[in-house]
Image 1 (cartoon, one colour):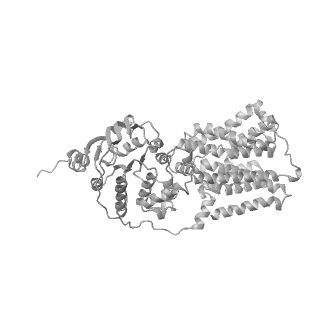
Image 2 (cartoon, one colour):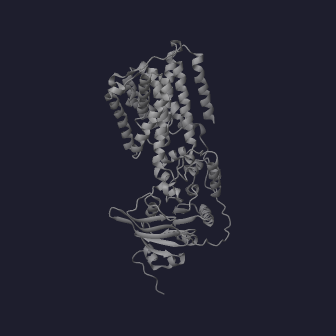
Image 3 (cartoon, one colour):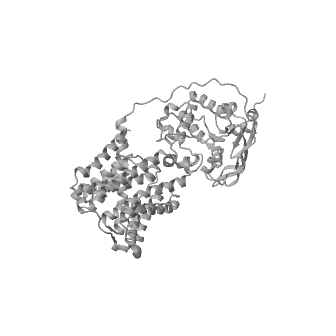
Length: 583
């Protein structure tokens, strides 16, 4: 709230500045260029700050908007301001086409490809003389207003675009779409497993990050009245965008704006007092190194951390487990999950070897075995984290082994992980609202902070006993509490089958009883479980039936009593030299 109030005060001051001081065009020009850089940095933040995919070619969209508006203004004989929105449309369309291809890569490959796209756009502009006039550039008409107004109309045009861009970024961050982008940044594989269509999210984010830059490019072309390939598609422009967002705070709402004004002022000072472009390049290079080394999260997060300095909070607390009410186990129903002859090899290692396993509706089925027996690998095959080399996987009567992880999730298949994979920089509530039960646009654009999604998250946090930690960072919770949050996260999908990978591993005994009671309650309400666990007493008490893996093969299956006394199972756990005691 304080940040929003401070932003409103700054906006009011910027709105009044040309009225109070209308006769100094130079400060107005410096500020409007700061607005332009802030528009680009805030837009870049959508794909690179929220989603974590760093683009070093984003100034390409400014050039695309400039050329689109310049060409249309000359051919149609209209004022460039009237067709400036078309610059945003063209930039968005190009972003969708490029993103559909390049966003299948990640890491350094994506960064290099974005630079290549920027340089390719410059080459195309130089060689398309019939359209762009090549290196000669395009000259536009002078502004139609009287020279006494100087830069004031451009000042307000860029300020309006900046406000719209920030509001757009804030709206995205509040939606399920925005939460999904942050989930991709934190752990893309985990995001896919909770229903986030990662490819679609990234392409949409890339397109969204291009629109306002394209519109601003059209206005900027009219401000300069001249467009050429070198100026429109300069690598230094992209570096400046990245530096502004990093300096202010990537992934925050106002950080890129603050960083843009700082970088623009320093750039202007370098141009005036230190000799121009070469000094700017050296200055930006040095500043980028300093920011990465000393302010890795940016200026705004550093100031916020210093200002708040929260007192340490002890999160581990005894949990009062409700007295268990005996209830009859649910009768096993139809087969819900069917694994038929599934195998997975990693080179010469056979991790899963021709496994056939059925999980019936309403059961808590255990999957046990020694370390390295293939249990987690089988989970990954079922949920889509790994492709099977052979065999079939059926869920609720539908073959799913060819579906992407989020498609399987949308069918009602959820899972937790052996080592919790929460999104540590998100709050507990944001972690719980992150899952997506379907891929409809209405779901993506729904408000994740308020409304039905937030209320459902609070109910689930009540269920696992952690509602009062909803606003805390997930990484601040104890390990056992993180296990409970991950369970609540999976329940947000209202799954029919939950795969739990070592739910008791590393959990404080005071929380383990609460966790098992939650599992029993969910099972009584109709949720089916497939549980991997090394705590054999817990398995024998909680699960029925039990399946045993060893060396990637299913060696035994049956009720707990049968498995407990099976010589084959004992041999798998105790080794080849084990012999039963002779009475």
